[in-house]
Structure formats: C-alpha cells, structure tokens
Length: 128
Image (cartoon, rainbow, N blue to C red):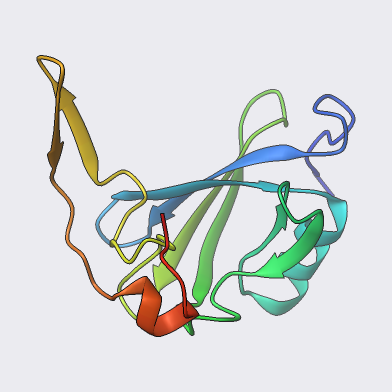
C-alpha cells in the first residue's frame, strides 16, 4: 500500500485538513506512522502533537471530531491531505471554524473566520 515517507521529515509528515464538502482549509497538523495507522483504522483523524510529544485524536477533549472522507498523498509522498467532515463546526482550538481565521492586509490583522465556541468553556483555558 502507498504510505507517506515519514523518513523525509524525521518521522513526521505535514497534514493539510480540508472540509470535504466546501473545500475550506481547516488546519495544518502533523502525523507520525502511528497517527497514520490509527487514522486509517478508525476513520477519525489522529495527529502527532509536536508540543506534547504524543498522538491525539482530533476532538478527544472538545468533541469536535474529524471524520475522514478521503486520504490523499502528494506526488513525493511527504504530505497528506485529509478531506473531513468536521463535527461540531470548529476545527481550531481557539474556537474558530478554521485555524486560518486571520487575514493580514496592509500590515493590519483582520478576523475573517467564524468563532464557534469559547475555548475557556471547552478546555478550561484560553485557546490562543
């Protein structure tokens, strides 16, 4: 079976996460081999947290799980694209629909995303 080339990135590959219906880019994360295997086995997105040094199921704390609809590999097999159904409406731990909720124009930051939840209520702390 075709698999990501985990050796190129020191054991990790970047994962672009996209809404399967709208095409909206929701987030960028990383997978190691174990996260890859768990994702394929369960149909739910698993990632490797570089800051915590461990595997995590997207939505394990918040309940905003990503149901995987399609898994694609780029031509070099060193980047994964997941097309997902985002349950609960928010992919970002800061409470926004997408992690890409800020636009920079003319040196100014503009909030362009939709905030779905308050991270203090969900996690007991600020999300950003």
